[in-house]
Image (cartoon, rainbow, N blue to C red):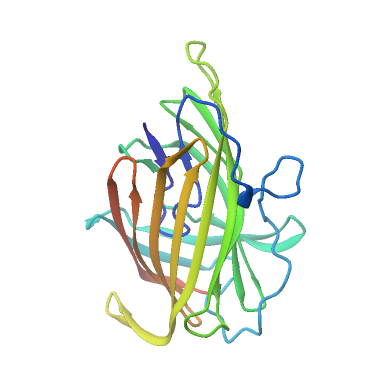
Length: 277
């Protein structure tokens, strides 16, 4: 059973897709909402967080962070994470990133083609909210077009004490349309995702690429992703994010474990240079 997931080192596996040829079973009740479709998809986080203690992810047009990127200790191409514009998305003023995810790949090494995804970030009090918009991509040399719903996630609360954690249960729906008469359209897939984050350290100093950053908050991010029709096909991720005051994300380290295929990938993202406006 082939699986595809976004190989991003930031909010890495919030967009995960399992391909299989069977109908979805009924969803677990803990993931159901009162909506007609039964999809709990909190795209809008309206309540502000507590009073911010600083700017741990500076948001301004043309801000840019360049990272060294490693997968299983093998250096990949450096990539830039940059902010291109401000927009109003779902009624909220947000910053739209030109590039946010470095790549997309499958557990067997297959690459997505034509990946098209909008990513937005905003700060609400002391909460830093990432919204991944609907995704579209092609795969198998364009034989299929994939579309996937996105959602929002609070990635950092800069005002909470060490040991504070927060959890969200969300779902994404993935649809597939065939571009080849030989292949039929595939059934849509609903993927259940549990995100648990915790502030594990604050006011620490971290050295990255020879530069020492003070006032760093370290966040632990655990995620479990599964499909109700194939509950044994789970993916678990564990990441640590390091946010430096007045700089932003300086380091990410962690791993993804694909339980069905018994594959674990380790990633490391380290800040090289940055430009803030």
